[in-house]
Length: 268
Image (tube, rainbow, N blue to C red):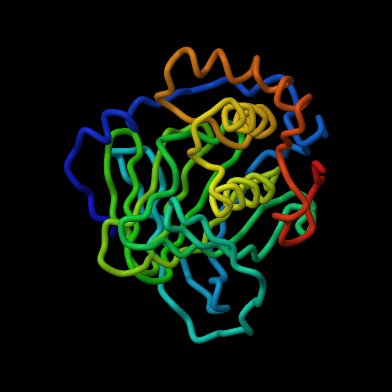
């Protein structure tokens, strides 16, 4: 079972759960409509990135009100999916998309993730609409949810409902290899391609108006995919106002040069 760790100051930040009403608008690239789906799944078999099948058995954790899954391997193997791997050097993460929203009729986005020791996947945040699922293939991955910390090992899986504050990092000494799924898929692929690309180009944490305008455009376009927690009030109020200015001066929510596979829509 996942190992429950003690509460830490990081959890104080992550543990502030924000239950947000679904935004009324349809956020997207160039104002595109994003298809929404109700998520209703109770799967007993899970296909790993290496093609093997995991039989899952539910474990209910009363401390966090989330379902954790313990899995076992089978010997059934299919060929590996070969595709481009993109890197975010600031987070210490590499990913490879396995299934995208256009390929699954909007049902999900699925990708492999390799997280370096000490790497983390962003600050505490929520996904207002999407359920996220993480299956550890090798190494260990640590999560903070509802003020509780978990460390998952190979074969263990964690499902995080929408609108749940969480963060993920690798506290181990070895690289963590995970299979990650977001349901529905929406614009998760485009968001990852854009933020990873900007990080590689050194445009992530630069100071100045240009950087703020770029992130205002991104925050507005992907507000139904992800929302950061713990931001100062001036940031929460200022970013939406700056987004139209960012568009006018040429910043976009997605760039063709960062595209790895077919997307819902590109913002050129």
